[in-house]
Length: 83
Image (cartoon, rainbow, N blue to C red):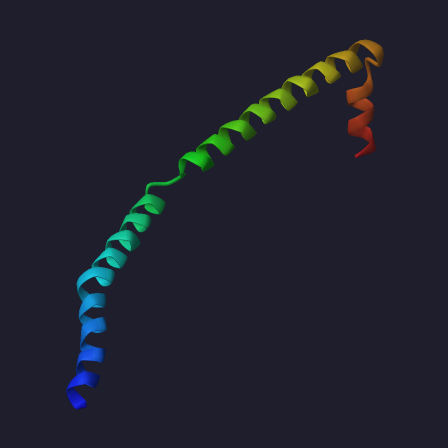
């Protein structure tokens, strides 16, 4: 009776220590190393997309300012006076 209980406890503990624990430790430190390396591929792609959008917005702002310079030459000075 006692031998059955010992086996029922001992076998899962040994299986955990031999198979599960080493894999758990390996995957844990692998993920830690990936996060320590900096940005992931997805984050890099998202950052590149945001940079592209920011560059497009900067170009649009320059275009709008050029249009305002032609249509309303003193708009920058009037904007500075209102602040």
